[in-house]
Length: 184
Image (cartoon, rainbow, N blue to C red; front, side, top):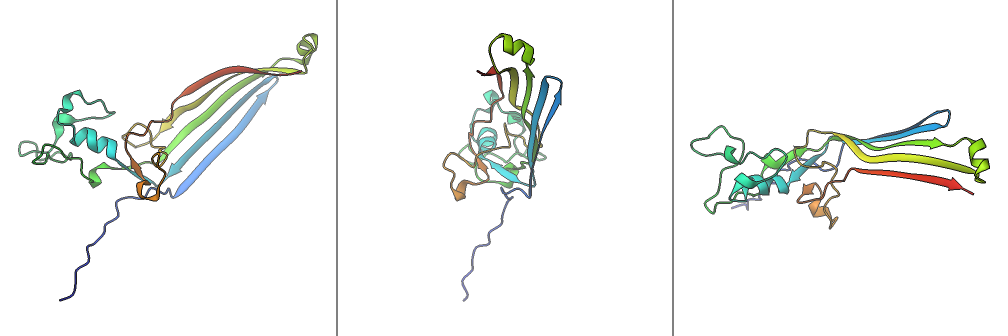
């Protein structure tokens, strides 16, 4: 009798089909506006975070996820739900295609506005140049991903097995900076 090999079904692909970016600077008199858009298209992520929070905590009424639906788990009384049913142990955070999401995104990664003081002013201050700037990072994201941030860093371990899996990854923070650059 021939041995039967188990079949393997791939669920998603963490490698994007396309990666893109756009960087530009606009200058007008002493002002410069710089920006960077970056994104990926055609990648998927298995969200272990959402699988755990939606299906495995037990008491879901206190869960805080972006779109948690704890009362909407599958049951005989709720057969039209797409959230997996509870197992006999009361937990259901097993791997499921339910938690594979499109992780394509477009982000405004950086936006910066700089003002260069006129040379007449800087010469009186005995400086070659002085610029004042404000900037922001990770300001805006467009994505169908249901988790916190589709731009995950393949887990802290960075190994090949965990690619495309997200579990408790800290999202890229929005940050704002003000400062100056001077040249003596």
